[in-house]
Length: 160
Length: 152
Image (cartoon, rainbow over all chains, first blue to last red; front, side, top):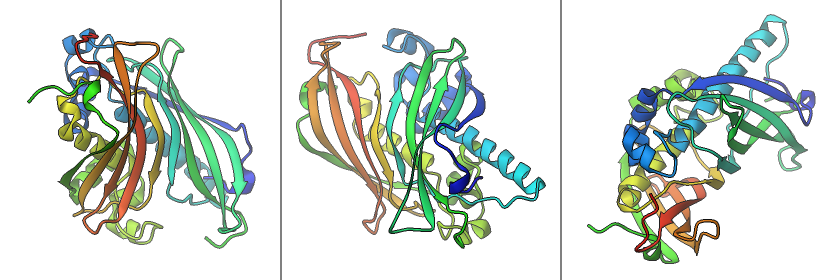
């Protein structure tokens, strides 16, 4: 992971794709979101979603999975090049999360993230604050998911 | 028990739900599947992290909150789903052994302009642990059928 000084507004990372199988949709829903349109094909068809739809929290969690995998690959590559890897802080949260279109069984969602804002903090000079727009697009190129996530990123000359 | 419709949601406190007990096993299982960072998986690595001990993924906490909402009221509401989350803040880590409580308040309720057979109800939710420390705060709407209307 990069230090604050090495990040530019507009930088985009393609995170990869996640396939939402009917079984995975139902397994997540049974644990965390057992609304009828997340559990049963026929109920999904009768709902506003028009088919068995993944829980929005499943979509967000899949985005997180790809972000973590991407960051770990990036960290390994940086280590291999002999560069120092920055350890980002825990996220304080997000805003503007939109489930734009339903994610239906057998959909494959491509996720990406793009840096939107960067600022420093006078109260915490060792950290920079980054906002990144995470987005998901289905196999037809339709946007299905968007959120603006906040992260604390260490500055290069701090001791953290 | 009758199904809750848009007209049943009045501004103000809706209820307090829980407790939902959290185990180390489920924290590690969720993290292994969706958020395999060391502080969510391994006690030793977590002890040295900024979270100072094993803590659950923020997405796991969101998913637990969703389940608590379902068990609390969405399971008996004519809900048509949610368009998103306006704002969510992770305020403190959640830990193995926590008994999570969820306080829910209705902050806004209006008829949908684009789909007048439905209403949009805005909820503010605060999840806290048994010592009363707030862990997560979220503002999110759901779309609910109006009385006497069948949308689907």
